[in-house]
Structures are given as C-alpha cells and as structure tokens.
Length: 445
Image (tube, rainbow, N blue to C red; front, side, top):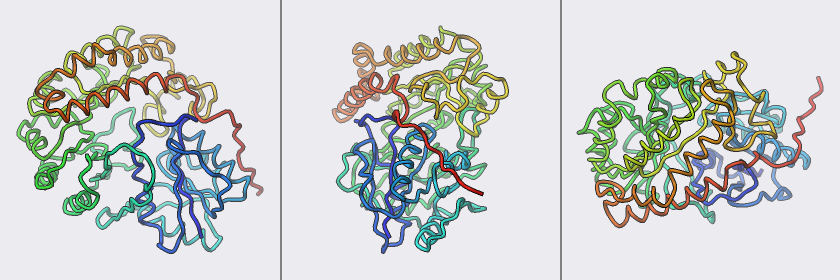
C-alpha cells in the first residue's frame, strides 16, 4: 500500500519562505513502516497526479481549503481515495466530505493507525474522531519525509498544544477546548539534540503556559546552547526574571499578538489581559532589555478601529524597533466566536470566503463599523508597505539591545525583512486555489 501526503498551497505561486510542515513528520512517524509513502509540498513543487498511489492524505487549512478540494478532484478522477484532516476538516467535516472519502477530526495521534488499517482493508469510514486527546509523551516524528526539499533552515519543534486563552477571533479553543497539554521536557530536548543545531522554532500557539512549566523548559534548554524563537503571550513580560531566563536559554525572537492599541478593541476580542498587568511600553522594555527581538502582530476591523488606526499601529511598531510586524484584516474563521457573531449580524461579505472565487488574499471578508471594507483592505496593505520601507528597516535595525546585538542577528534581521517585503507584494490580491471549478462528490443514498 502507498500513501501520498500533500501539503496544498493557497495559490499557484511558489513560496520563498516555506518552513517544514510538522504535521507530516508526525503522520509519517505514525504510519506503519511497511507502508510506502511519498510527500509533496505544493508551495515548493508541482504535484505528480499520475504517480500511482492508493491513498492521498491532506491537512486542510481554511486558506488552503479551495485548493485542497481541487487537488482532491484531480485524484478522484484517477480513482484514488482521499482523506482530509486538520483544523478546517475538524470544524467543517461535512464540507470536506463533499470532496473526500474520509475526514479525521482532531489530532492524528491515537487515530491515524486505524485510518491506515481501514484503508488497507478497503473499508475506509467517512469520519474518524476520538473522544479524548491522546497523550503527547512518547511521540516520534519522522523528518525523513522532508529529504530533498528546500525549506528555510529552521527546525520546527512542538512542546505543547492548546492555549489557556479564548480570544474572539481564534479557533484554537474550538479545536482543543480547554485542554492544554505538554510533552515531557526531556523528550523535547532529546528531539532537538537529534535533529541538529539549526535555529529552533517552537510552533506552540503559546509557549507560556505558566511560570513553572516555562521555567522547567527554559532551564532545560540552556545546556543545548541553541538559538530559538516562539509564539508567546505578552503577559510573560510581567516577570522580568523569567524573560531573562528565556533569553539565557537561547530565545532570540518571539512573536507577540499585540492585536490593537485600543483598550476597547482588546476587550471586544477577549484579549484585555494584554494590558491587565502593565502597559505595552513596559512590557516591550522588559523584553528588549533582555535582548529578545519582537515580532508584533496587529489585526484591524474591530468596532473601535478607524482609518487612523493603521498609521498609529505602524508608528508604534517602527518606533519600538520591532524585528518584524504584520498588519492583518480581521478574518473570521470557522468555529471561532467572531465568525458566528458576524454571521448573526449579517456582516459577512461572502457566504464562505475560503471557497468564493471573488475573494483574494488580503481582502476584507466582512463590513466593519468604523470604515468600509475597501478601506480595511487598503489600510492593511498600506500598513504592511509602510512598515517595510528601506527607511523603516534601517531605523529598526539600529537597536543594539536586540536587532543589532550581533553580526548573526543583523544577518537574520536583514534577510527576514527582505523576504517579508517581497512576499507582501507577491501575495496581495492573489485568488485562492486556481480557476478549476469545484466538483463535489455525488453520493447516492
């Protein structure tokens, strides 16, 4: 039996900043060794649809859903069975089952082996779901699946899954509920040692679970002498000693969701805790004094945003010399509280924007209250462009505490900003998927 794993691309354009998709190393590690496998990442390479295979497995994200269904159509024309998993398949299984033979809802651990066994026996079921999440201890990732592919030289590692917060726009809580699980720190460190000394990026939605767990992880990383980055909630900055330990353990950069400079917006998005302990300026100083480069993200379109909000956020990010920043239109995704609220209020522009051929990357997907949808689209693009001008890049580089701290950091800063600047203009306005029509499966009762 042969299984082909596929990572769909959002649009038919090759990517210059692709990182290894960790989920496929997880799936490869869970697949019995006597099963033949291949893997194609459409961000890097075309998919050889005529290559013989028995089963195609795709992880579907909302932004890649349209392309995923188009890929499924191509394989179904050739008589190949399709199984879909991931966030989008978990949230909208009925939609995915219009194009796939089976859907896996939730994590792959504890269930993928059953899918493979059923596929071998020719009795693939439409839905696979388990009542409880499987423990993360003892998991093994087979990174051989990436061999020969040109990804960024960054090693992705996962410590835990889930987030203790429940933000209005985020679907993490809808996927994991209140469950927040971590792998044993010893296993994480052993994995890092095995894969070598590339820069490590922790893919956790929030590396800061609590002080005790963060302290245990950071202390264990110190002997490894690696550099690493992560996504983290800004409330870690209320503990300067913990932030210093974070830096001593090798952390050079962390992504923080500032989201908005308006307190009322933060309350509306259920992220008032961003400013619960201290203001942004104090938190930023704690982080930068410890030498941590800041990647700040902002979203626009909440009820207290106006056309003036974009310039204010850009000035804030440039003034604080952020390493990188992103300025995104607020985008409702399935099962997030935001989506349900906007749908009930009749403010969505598309029925399902991820399938609508009129939607293009960067477009507003709903009607905000403080500006028009077109102003939201244009404002985010203008903010991204302004933050990434040559003058802004030079100004932000010259921070000796963080971005200009060492020759290595200067190189990382310049390369990252150059790639980001190119990708902004490269992606804006691209349609999702391609022009191929979607052909749902006709199932007879």
